[in-house]
Amino acid sequence: MVKLSKKRKTSTKSKAKKTKKKQPDKKVKKIPEKKIKPLKLTKKTTVSANEEKVVISKIKKQSTEKKQYNLKEFVVYPKHGVGKITAIEKTNIGQIEVHFYKIFIEKEKLTLTVPINQQNNLRPIATINQINKCISILKSKPKIKRTMWSRRAQEYDQKINSGKIYELAEVVKDLNKNSDIIADQSYSERQLFEKAYERLKSEFQAVLNTPIEDVQKKMDKALGRNQNLIGDE
Image (cartoon, rainbow, N blue to C red; front, top):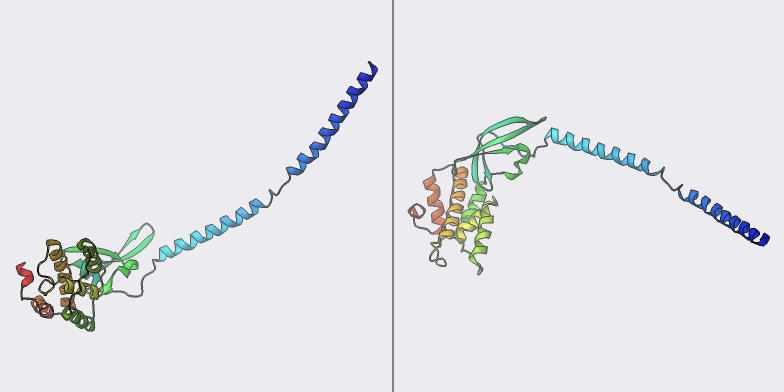
């Protein structure tokens, strides 16, 4: 009986020693680097706050483009054609003062409101030299691609709405039905042709400052068209 009691005492001592060895290991693992992280977070939040303040100050100033148009001046809005600036006004949106143009498109009887800081959508009307180059484009032979009409129609529509006068003249030249290549026109071809023709004619009139009849005669002569053919259609 005495020997058994001694063995039990030794087993309890060995367990106590094992538990004592594990305890200091747990305390060492709980120490890792927690004090460094909050310092980095505070620096990031201060930088982001400063960046937001800079952006807001720029919006309040409403940066403008270099080119500024005057009252009663003609401009070209790509998707609608030639228009005339009828007013230059300002309004407050929130705490921001916004200046904008009122542009009247006579052909469509439409008034557009274009903010001055977004006037990169506008372009000034063509010069006399550009008009002369357009006439030479109209006199040249049309270029017809051998692709599906749906794809060509998309390309023509993109050129018309690009606002570029040379591309507009190319559409008029390529869809001119009075040429030897294009004998007949479908309804969609005629629509695209008339849209491009009328936009080009309105810019010709604004630049040359002549009656619309004289402008049409000038264009039809370059295209080799019969007079008043557009009106008959």
